[in-house]
Image 1: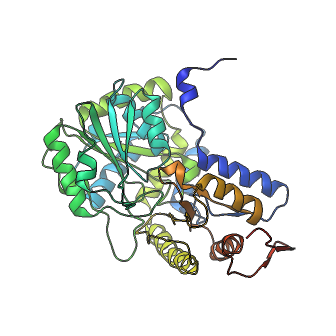
Image 2: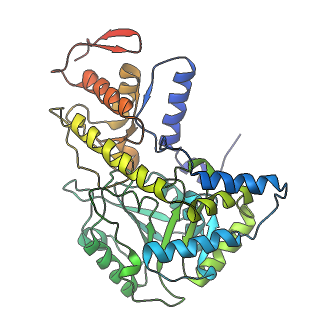
Length: 405
């Protein structure tokens, strides 16, 4: 059986692959600790559950308008005003089946074959693959000094006559680092001057630590017309722990919004009315759960940083937000893929190789699980890698001895 050149060019998702590896080991009864997942343990907001249940009880589960049901688009409009101080209308909103599909539909809307999209590394694994899926060319920008935040010079040096968009995810998956407001302002002004789209993936924008606040692109935009090049992608998956509901949205100018509606109409028709109703319930309901999750994540981050700093060879940049940090393990092994496989085999700990995010020698570690998982997971990694750690450890009910360091 043959597949298309495009299908052969698209890589499998490493995060989903690691999730599957962990699932299979757990099914065998292995005591796996998952430090690779981007899925919080907190429950879905009760307002989302009740709204979804009420809709289901009507037994009236039908198609919806492609752009989304009115209660949800109105909730997004209000959310944008409250969190971004930006007034938008229904003509600026499209609801998608998750933020990932939102990004895909957006790229399909703005990218012609061979158009270039600038993506700073470390980046979310799907950005380059989605750009390739719409026949664009991802241009990865990685500062030579290893910083997680590029400079304007890093970015502008990669701009060419083919550049169509710059994609920014801040706070960033996988590093947790947040781009400073000064850089966001420079990017907005530069993109508006050069007529380049600036795509802001804001999926983590309310999960920020240490009293900081994620800067809004709308604070710096001077173009409020229908030709605006500023686009925001967001969704309910992360801040409301609603990963399984698959509801995201885009905020864009009217022309782009109309085009995305046409694209969505031809591939998914519309997201499920049940899931949209749940998302509206979350946005309209009590918001204390978001702050509770944020505080939990900040505490977990602090614990993970303390544990990682006990390594002699690990370098870690403290995350400003998200679920993740991206420590440098290159002192132990240069290949992050080999290291992740080694830790899964020897220590039963799931991590995600930094290579998949454009940063070799690093591992993405998630702290959105329990404190027990964090402390035990890092202890196992330390046992497997650090020759100064004790030679023996219990993993599950088995006592193991390190004989490879």
